[in-house]
Each structure stands twice: as structure tokens, then as C-alpha cells.
Image 1 (cartoon, helix red, strand yellow):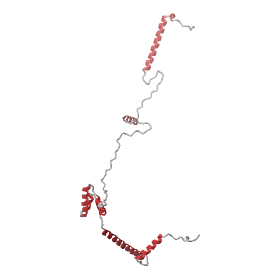
Image 2: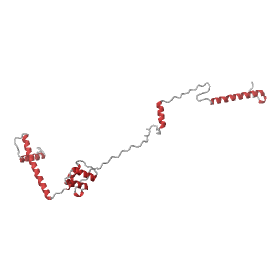
Image 3: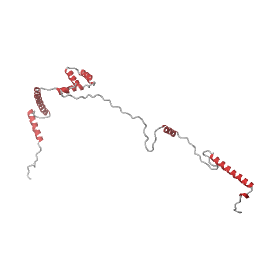
Image 4: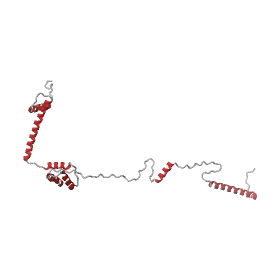
Length: 233
């Protein structure tokens, strides 16, 4: 058989028409196959090729609730970090209620006395009761005093502003010395009495007890004697 090409002019016309029609039929068949494959529904494959279709499983109730909550939430999730706090208004602390302070400076002289202190001193010197003085104090200051506030204040004010003459000051010193001496005498008499109660065979006088006590105090204050101090080396 020869491999030489046959010119078209030598091919009979009937043969050419049959071949042309056959080629047209093949082209139409291929075109229909392509259109058929394009029109296939998702999940369908070519004939003879099995296609595995994964069924759509409905989400669980917990997952559906979570997804619904995520869709309704406007908070942006961040990976690896805690989700930002919701924009709730910060809780404001209430300012402490300040109560009027009852502490007032105690005057040390007549010139430093306030109007309410003068009222306190005058009403007390006139013999008014502490209830009446407290009501008047509340009217003038706007503060209700405690039960012991005004009596203590009056005593301190009176002690600060009272003055004494030189004669009274000298009498003060004399009276103080007398009372202290009397108290000292009574103290040592009580000591002598208590010594007998504890078992002493003799009742010592106040003078003896005072002298003996002075000797004991002096001996206790002296350092102990070193017996090796005068020995020559």
C-alpha cells in the first residue's frame, strides 16, 4: 500500500459528500456531549464515574445557638486575646457624705473667744442647764453637740482664760506644800501600820522609816565595791 496522498481532484464527489456528512455528525455529537456535561447538576459526574456526595448535616442546637449569638453580637473576636469588655458605663463611687466637724479650737485667752464660746460661758455662769445651752449652741452653730461636748469645752475654756492675782498664786503654792506634806505624813503612817500587819515586831515612827528608806536608796545607787581594786599588780 502506498503512503502517497491522493489529490482531491481524483476523489469521487460521492465519496467526499459522505465523508463530509460523517464529520459533521461527529462534530454535532461532541458538541452535544459538551453541552450535556455543562448542564449536569452539582454532584453528577460523567457517565461511568461515581461521585461521592457529602450530605449536609443540620448543626447541633448548641452550635446553632452559638452562631446565632455571634451573628447578633457586635463585639469583634480576637484570636489569642480576651474579648473586649462590653461597653457598659463605669460604676461611679458615691462621694462620702461629709458631716460638719464638731472640733473647734479651744481659745487660750479672752481675745480668742468666739461668739458661741462666749454664749456658752455666759449661759453656764447664769446657771442655765446643759439642755438649754445645747439648744442655743445648735441654733448659733447649726450643729447638735454630744452630751459631753459642751461640759468639757466649758471646763477647758474656763481654765484657759482664768487669771489669778499674785496673792492667790502665793496662796496656791502654800496650800500645795501643806497638802503634800500632810499626804506624805499620812502615807508613812500607813506604811508603818502595814509593816506591823505583815509581821514586824516594832512599830517604827515616820521619821525612822523615812531615814531608813533614804539610806536604802543611797546604797542602791552606789556601784558595788571591787575587792581586787586596791591590790597592787
